[in-house]
Length: 208
Ligand SMILES: [Zn+2]
Image (cartoon, rainbow, N blue to C red):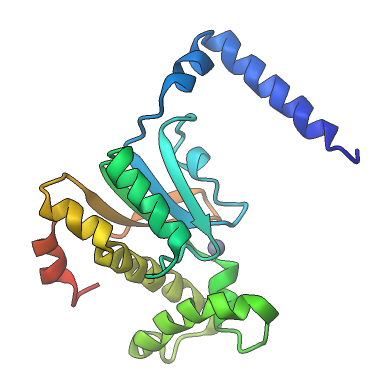
């Protein structure tokens, strides 16, 4: 148990099952990855990127952190976006939030949470920026609304990176999407915020 043998057993069964269905699967995949999508989502264990959109290994490039935040100076996230856009040539960046996000809840519950409060300041910023939209809501409704507003804000942050803006300036086809996932029924919703060019971002920046 100390060495987590059960996980290695599950891994063996998983790999064997895939090879039985497609003997060349891993050989083909080991030669290259060519995903069309970059997924920026929450680290929450209930929101596994590939499973939600039912895509096999090789189809989704993934970055996850608490509350799917895209911080302007986060070298980790920026490096992922840079690699996805400039090396993998992905066509779509998907920012996917989810209702009931523990990170969002913690950001507005008024209690101290230790070190993570520094990260949650980014969510508090979204709350402050959207004060009028959140005012008067119950704590639960406020959390759900802030989960949505956070997706919109992070879409904006992705569009503001030099990486995405340079790609658009170079004529590269690249769309940035905002989605939200419902952990209670497993359903994804497109928040209709798709941005595909610098002009569109400039026009819509005030709306999202
Ligand atoms: Zn979350």
